View 1 (cartoon, rainbow, N blue to C red):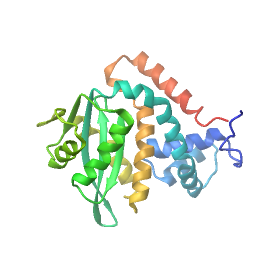
View 2: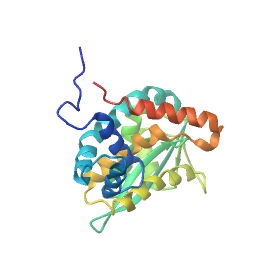
View 3: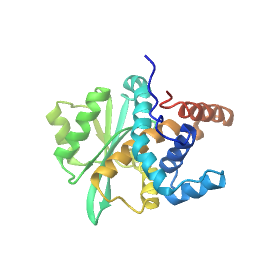
View 4: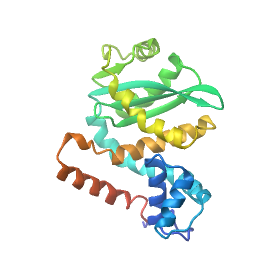
Length: 235
């Protein structure tokens, strides 16, 4: 059965839509920055159109990426998880974005909550265990909520903590922090959760760990990632 293209009712080409969504989510650019960059390429669209595109197609692209990567991650990312939470201000109130990454910085999942307690930790851990299974090691930042949540789930003997050993999770917050500043903070929990999910998937797709191997291999992997991106949701 032929797959129906999600772009069928849009006059703009899918290539332009993918490019606009990638530029906005992947890089610390505002909607008006993306509008200006596209204008330099001869593409005249409004920043509100770009807002509509990332809201409409961002979840589709993220879901497509996750579906293609989840089978590999189930066997690869269960060696070590790094769990951490970052505070985010929404309308002047402190909220918490709980995030999990694996030993190579692959974003596994994220959850937005109002509190920093066992119930919030359970919400994140249940999603992780359901999707990826039980890991060999779980690295935390000594927050007692993790230990209490793991004890309730019956996952014991995996947790480890200590000074500096959770830097992998701390560093993984930086791209999202840059996006937060570009977007002049978030307005709703729902919009933060949506953007964090989309941003995590797109960051995984283009994160090439360029410092780990030669320039030639990096260029090949980057070209392959870009080619795969251009085929997302192709009808």
